[in-house]
Image (cartoon, rainbow, N blue to C red; front, side):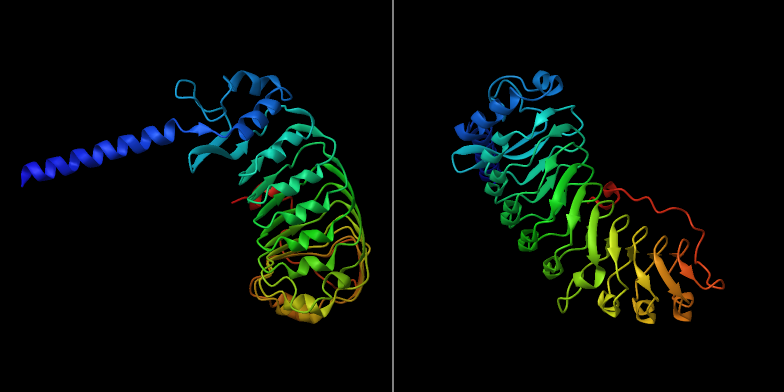
Length: 330
């Protein structure tokens, strides 16, 4: 019996070693090797010195390239993650990246990339995370981003994008986090974004957006999962719609530094999870309904810089809310 157990153990060990050998020495797909070596010629010195050899997945002697994660698919290894952030990468967004068709994560934040995101980005159908924040990317967002059906995390903040926010983003049915703040977007926020059933965080602050916030909530049942809505430092006008009260998961509503008008509807005080309400530096008037002061979870309500009646009081210690998109990364 002992000999049988030993034999079975040895067989399993040999099988495991063969499997490991097979994974380790599977060939890297030529498409991915060519694309990464093309990128290697364009990037900064930090990557050049850490990307040794010709095989980004490693060749059995040299290790995989820094920031490159590969996975075995069939008889080949393919690149599934490219995470090269804070590496002083300069120049235009490398179009060769769009040939890495098995990418699930593309993280190039905090570099010095310029130029537009190429429309070929739409090829990356398996992409789950696209993080390009803190670069110098420019021009309009290509509508082809809307073809990334698996995309869950989209971080494009702190760049120089301009033009309108493409309504094709509403095709990203898996999207949970959308960060487009600190750019130069113009026009209205597409109401179609409200159809994103899984969207938890929307930050479009510090742009040049116009229109009424009521337009954003014109679709019935919109934004069912939204927890944080940042629209501060834009040029939004009009009043607060009662439909905001339908956002039962909302925790932070940040509308500071716009041109919004009218009275504050009491219906907003019925949002059960609301903790932070930023209404300051607008053109609101009248009184604040008493229900806000009795809200069990509301910790901060900013109201300064409006035309409220003199007896209206704020709520909370009034520390300036300065959340970056890193506070919402998971």
